Length: 382
Image (cartoon, one colour):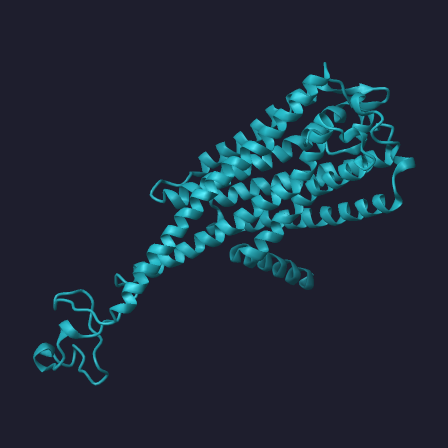
């Protein structure tokens, strides 16, 4: 679970005192070096990439949509992980077993980490619901800016409410910040409840929403394919002379301005002429429908990729904490390595989204390049 991702907190918690040895003596050098290297890379990519996401959406008027505002909220949560959680974890590891951050940070640091990851999962739920409305019920009005702000406020409020029990049990004890639960059953219940609220429920809602969206897009694609086949099979159309669709005339056929008596001089029967469609004709509707279908499909693919990566990055940490609480995890000789892997995967999730946006969305890719070129040109000018 994400009650905490810090190995050192488990070390001093009463039920797990013997689970992990002193970080300074038992840590493998290669593991520590590898973890700090990965932390540094994640920090740089997360701060740089998520800042670009926020700037691109803020500076591009056509990208100021509900979906993108929710992506900004996701980017802010990821920035919080990079700027707050990663640096402080490094400090905690370097100063273990002493707690040098004070009682206030004891109450705030780990609950903040938990609330931020919870906010990310709730934001992904909101994004999936926005896509569900846009694709399955396209006639419904989109969320206004005020409604979007309320949704974002709810994501953070719910996230903070869920960590209140955790905040209350953290206190300074024997010179270190520890969890002091009234009973083992209370701790286990909170672990399980947070796992359900933070992972199971959001992933279930997201899976249902995107399943509906994918089915709708698939049905639209099949209908469009059938219409396209019908159009190809009837290469010539019979239309009344009063039709708004103009027949395609030979190149030597006189123009209307040249011959007001065009109908009497023509040897072509309009009702049997091959038709060409101008952009303003009804044939433009299928093209627009196809473009909209392709655009929705690309957006959904990108968002599904974001959700899958979130689940992949969060699941190892969740499983390890459930194993500790309800299994024999705290007696495993590899517990420290598993907790390190879990926390690293949580932090990794904060850096992957900008890479996905750049690789799977043309608007974001163009926006990133535009910002970078602007910065580069300004730097050369200076």
